[in-house]
Length: 175
Image 1 (cartoon, rainbow, N blue to C red):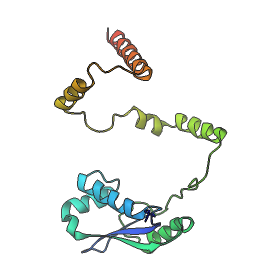
Image 2 (tube, helix red, strand yellow):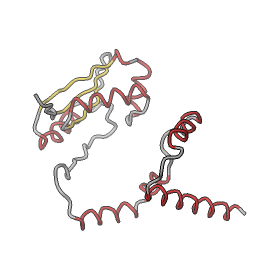
Image 3 (cartoon, one colour):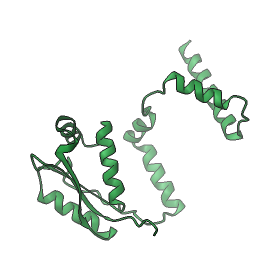
Image 4 (tube, rainbow, N blue to C red):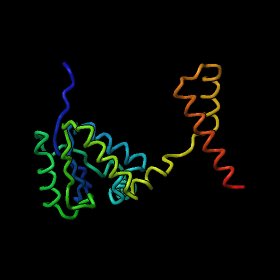
Protein backbone atom coordinates (compact mmCIF):
# COMPACT_ATOMS: atom_id res chain seq x y z
CA UNK A 1 0.00 0.00 0.00
CA UNK A 2 1.53 3.35 -1.03
CA UNK A 3 2.27 5.98 1.59
CA UNK A 4 -0.37 8.72 1.69
CA UNK A 5 0.69 11.85 3.57
CA UNK A 6 -1.66 13.14 6.23
CA UNK A 7 -2.65 16.81 6.24
CA UNK A 8 -3.50 18.53 9.49
CA UNK A 9 -2.64 20.73 12.43
CA UNK A 10 -0.22 19.58 15.12
CA UNK A 11 0.80 20.67 18.60
CA UNK A 12 3.99 20.46 20.64
CA UNK A 13 2.92 20.88 24.26
CA UNK A 14 4.99 21.34 27.39
CA UNK A 15 3.31 18.91 29.81
CA UNK A 16 4.02 20.88 33.01
CA UNK A 17 3.08 24.41 31.92
CA UNK A 18 0.58 23.63 29.18
CA UNK A 19 2.29 26.05 26.76
CA UNK A 20 1.85 24.95 23.18
CA UNK A 21 3.46 25.36 19.78
CA UNK A 22 1.01 25.00 16.88
CA UNK A 23 1.78 24.27 13.28
CA UNK A 24 0.18 22.81 10.19
CA UNK A 25 1.42 20.82 7.24
CA UNK A 26 0.25 18.77 4.32
CA UNK A 27 2.70 16.13 5.64
CA UNK A 28 1.99 16.48 9.33
CA UNK A 29 3.90 13.39 10.55
CA UNK A 30 7.03 14.41 8.62
CA UNK A 31 6.75 17.93 10.05
CA UNK A 32 6.45 16.68 13.64
CA UNK A 33 9.55 14.53 13.15
CA UNK A 34 11.39 17.54 11.71
CA UNK A 35 10.51 19.58 14.81
CA UNK A 36 11.90 16.79 17.02
CA UNK A 37 15.13 16.67 14.99
CA UNK A 38 15.58 20.44 15.14
CA UNK A 39 14.90 20.54 18.89
CA UNK A 40 17.30 17.66 19.57
CA UNK A 41 20.04 19.34 17.52
CA UNK A 42 19.40 22.77 19.07
CA UNK A 43 18.46 24.43 15.77
CA UNK A 44 14.73 25.07 16.17
CA UNK A 45 13.45 28.39 14.78
CA UNK A 46 11.38 29.14 17.92
CA UNK A 47 13.88 30.32 20.57
CA UNK A 48 11.31 30.01 23.39
CA UNK A 49 10.44 26.42 22.49
CA UNK A 50 14.12 25.56 22.06
CA UNK A 51 15.01 27.05 25.46
CA UNK A 52 12.21 25.12 27.20
CA UNK A 53 13.23 21.90 25.41
CA UNK A 54 16.85 22.39 26.48
CA UNK A 55 15.84 23.12 30.08
CA UNK A 56 13.19 20.42 30.64
CA UNK A 57 14.13 17.72 28.12
CA UNK A 58 12.25 15.81 25.45
CA UNK A 59 10.18 13.75 27.91
CA UNK A 60 8.49 16.94 29.14
CA UNK A 61 6.91 17.52 25.73
CA UNK A 62 4.01 15.90 23.92
CA UNK A 63 4.11 15.86 20.10
CA UNK A 64 0.68 15.16 18.62
CA UNK A 65 -1.74 15.76 15.77
CA UNK A 66 -4.66 17.93 16.87
CA UNK A 67 -6.83 17.97 13.73
CA UNK A 68 -6.83 16.12 10.42
CA UNK A 69 -8.12 18.36 7.63
CA UNK A 70 -7.94 19.24 3.94
CA UNK A 71 -5.02 21.49 2.89
CA UNK A 72 -7.27 24.49 2.22
CA UNK A 73 -8.46 24.55 5.87
CA UNK A 74 -5.23 23.96 7.75
CA UNK A 75 -4.10 27.60 8.03
CA UNK A 76 -7.50 28.74 9.32
CA UNK A 77 -7.58 26.00 11.96
CA UNK A 78 -3.99 26.75 13.02
CA UNK A 79 -4.81 30.47 13.32
CA UNK A 80 -7.84 29.65 15.47
CA UNK A 81 -5.69 27.58 17.83
CA UNK A 82 -2.98 30.26 18.05
CA UNK A 83 -5.69 32.79 18.92
CA UNK A 84 -7.30 30.45 21.49
CA UNK A 85 -3.98 29.91 23.34
CA UNK A 86 -2.26 33.31 23.48
CA UNK A 87 0.49 32.05 25.82
CA UNK A 88 2.15 29.86 23.19
CA UNK A 89 5.62 29.13 21.87
CA UNK A 90 4.79 30.37 18.35
CA UNK A 91 6.13 33.87 18.91
CA UNK A 92 3.65 35.25 16.40
CA UNK A 93 -0.06 35.76 16.50
CA UNK A 94 -0.72 35.77 12.75
CA UNK A 95 -0.20 32.59 10.78
CA UNK A 96 1.25 33.40 7.38
CA UNK A 97 -0.81 31.68 4.70
CA UNK A 98 0.99 29.77 2.02
CA UNK A 99 -1.16 31.27 -0.71
CA UNK A 100 0.98 29.75 -3.46
CA UNK A 101 0.48 26.19 -2.23
CA UNK A 102 -0.26 23.90 -5.19
CA UNK A 103 -0.21 26.70 -7.77
CA UNK A 104 2.01 26.87 -10.85
CA UNK A 105 3.73 30.23 -11.33
CA UNK A 106 4.23 31.82 -14.72
CA UNK A 107 7.76 32.76 -15.76
CA UNK A 108 6.76 36.43 -15.49
CA UNK A 109 5.55 35.95 -11.90
CA UNK A 110 8.75 34.08 -10.97
CA UNK A 111 10.80 36.95 -12.44
CA UNK A 112 8.87 39.53 -10.37
CA UNK A 113 9.43 37.52 -7.18
CA UNK A 114 13.14 37.21 -7.99
CA UNK A 115 13.48 40.95 -8.62
CA UNK A 116 11.70 41.73 -5.35
CA UNK A 117 13.99 39.41 -3.41
CA UNK A 118 17.11 40.89 -4.95
CA UNK A 119 16.05 44.36 -3.75
CA UNK A 120 15.48 43.13 -0.20
CA UNK A 121 18.25 43.87 2.32
CA UNK A 122 17.21 40.92 4.46
CA UNK A 123 17.66 38.57 1.47
CA UNK A 124 21.05 40.06 0.63
CA UNK A 125 22.21 39.49 4.21
CA UNK A 126 20.91 35.90 4.23
CA UNK A 127 22.58 35.03 0.92
CA UNK A 128 25.88 36.56 2.00
CA UNK A 129 26.04 34.49 5.18
CA UNK A 130 27.84 31.18 5.36
CA UNK A 131 25.55 28.45 6.63
CA UNK A 132 26.66 25.70 8.96
CA UNK A 133 30.05 24.86 10.34
CA UNK A 134 33.13 24.21 8.22
CA UNK A 135 33.79 20.54 7.66
CA UNK A 136 36.59 18.89 9.63
CA UNK A 137 39.87 18.61 7.73
CA UNK A 138 39.82 14.78 7.69
CA UNK A 139 36.48 14.83 5.82
CA UNK A 140 37.69 17.26 3.16
CA UNK A 141 40.92 15.27 2.74
CA UNK A 142 38.96 12.02 2.38
CA UNK A 143 36.64 13.60 -0.22
CA UNK A 144 39.66 14.94 -2.12
CA UNK A 145 41.27 11.49 -2.13
CA UNK A 146 38.09 9.85 -3.44
CA UNK A 147 37.71 12.42 -6.23
CA UNK A 148 41.40 12.50 -7.23
CA UNK A 149 41.84 11.54 -10.86
CA UNK A 150 38.10 11.64 -11.57
CA UNK A 151 37.31 13.77 -14.64
CA UNK A 152 35.45 17.00 -13.88
CA UNK A 153 32.25 18.10 -15.61
CA UNK A 154 32.13 21.35 -17.56
CA UNK A 155 29.98 22.85 -14.80
CA UNK A 156 32.61 21.97 -12.16
CA UNK A 157 35.39 23.45 -14.29
CA UNK A 158 33.43 26.71 -14.68
CA UNK A 159 32.83 26.85 -10.91
CA UNK A 160 36.58 26.43 -10.26
CA UNK A 161 37.44 29.16 -12.77
CA UNK A 162 34.92 31.57 -11.18
CA UNK A 163 36.20 30.77 -7.70
CA UNK A 164 39.79 31.43 -8.74
CA UNK A 165 38.75 34.75 -10.31
CA UNK A 166 37.06 35.83 -7.06
CA UNK A 167 40.12 34.82 -5.04
CA UNK A 168 42.44 36.77 -7.35
CA UNK A 169 40.15 39.81 -7.09
CA UNK A 170 40.16 39.60 -3.27
CA UNK A 171 43.96 39.33 -3.17
CA UNK A 172 44.28 42.45 -5.36
CA UNK A 173 41.94 44.35 -3.05
CA UNK A 174 44.10 43.46 -0.02
CA UNK A 175 47.27 44.84 -1.68
